[in-house]
Length: 397
Image (cartoon, rainbow, N blue to C red):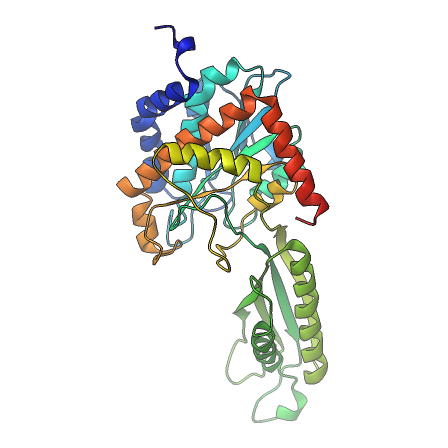
């Protein structure tokens, strides 16, 4: 039978099935060799090689990031779809966030869709995004124009729920340093200004603040410098704080509150304080309802019903939020562990490397490829996605 006469979704499903062992081998290779943010050299090269062998034109080191890439098929006047892949791991836990499955699903969707995409008159991209866990590679890619002209950015994430979209909050890290004056705690204690006392007071103050923050907001801190010896009043201490808020605007307000608390502590203790942002700001995620509905429908066709997220439950933050501020974007979750578990655990890392992860990865690959095909072959769908995007922007997202 002429393959052009076969239902395109059947063709995609058959292609994913035929590629299943190949993409699982890639995913397993990533799982067995976890690499940290901005150091995913072997992962990036492995994925680039797979794309090039399939006929994609691959540009490495986009946005001046050594482990980023963009693979491309097609260069027509039709819609452009970006399949977004992640492949960095966590210190000490490996792929306990399942990024090996994200990479495998995106790669599988791209390879399964390659021939169909070429016939749509559109453009299919595979965007390799490093450092989601620590640094935000997608933020650099957004700022470098990698997503300019893209009509839909698609990815999935493994998790403990089957959710049609991800409740991801805005996030930033701050480094707060207190400067006092060293002295001997017995010989001349009155000459000292205790910078550690100031840092401890800040932690206590932020604990009180946290009890009154709105849903989706919190502050979590660690001591990075607390002094050198017990017989010296510390003249310098430092803490690192992760701030999250339901919206990016809310995060701006929270940063101002934390800064104000630090300055009040400094005045009360006679220290001076330095407040600095660490890295880029992760924007809150804006799921595109039009594209999310299409993906959910394809997932349901595969026997996996996905629901709306539970109200009041948040799943962290991601630099995909910054992509969602520029183009229509989806980031659904597929379950690899029951809801009473969580990611960033050894158990999640184990599931990401066994049949539980494999099953979710293959289902995601097929649903992503079908969704991408719908956008590529139906420009009106892309326009509806953009209309929903613009409505979100007008309402404040």
